Length: 389
Image (cartoon, rainbow, N blue to C red):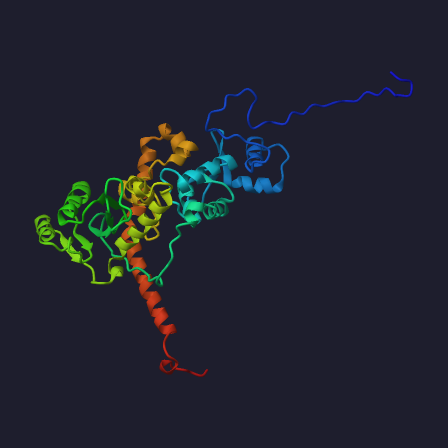
């Protein structure tokens, strides 16, 4: 030791900070990999080791979270547990939701609703979904141009699913598909907004009758009514004979007024826009994209019902590719679900299901109130009664 140095005894204390992931532990493919820049790291550390010093902000935030088999989950207001995702995971989820196999290239708000519906969460969900949809090139190129002012739709109230259908034709489509299909026949259920569609080569009445028998009657039962326009294929003698055979009403909309069959026109617009966004190189392959378009439509939220057509039809949500890419809680723990838990989930969904007719009536009443308020605002001044206090 040099002479100018003083010998001192220094006490060294080793304090090992706990790690979220123990060294040497095998990590599953879908387990959360937490980094220092991850927003989940301080919350998970506090929940696992609450005796360690932590910021007040973290302690307040942690009241809404809990650990579930090494995953951080958030407790929502409706008592649903949402799996918390990091940046790498939620980028995969947004990609599958927006432009994946069942992606409908929907807007940011619908993306956020669907992702939360399937049990995922991160703090900037709405902002990230909106920015992701705005940055999609396929969504910006074929954007629809509104030619006429929007008119509020008057909902057709049906007592239960598949009692009333709206039917219409899309076409003539140019270019024709590689199989020489030039038209698409579309049918939409008024209650669940479930859509059936099929590419066809001609618009003969026999093609339409075959579609009704195979896609509607043999799958969902005999409806009470089918609403169409006044095209020659819909009002032919063969169609009238079929309606008489199966005892359902064949209703026609007002001539030269497409809005009278607004449900069918709305479905047509959505299907056309989604197919345009899915086509990349060969436009003649549009008939191959139709099935994916229908899947995307059926698993997307409809504004009239606040639910997806798939959920209203089958009583539960479909398994989407984003749940395979990043496992949701229901996929990860599906084998641990008891019969009692499943019955409780079905009862909870049935309650919302029975509220659907009331929602339609509420929409009708709200529309009437809005019309009355608009009429009062647009009254001329000479018809108003002025009073002086």
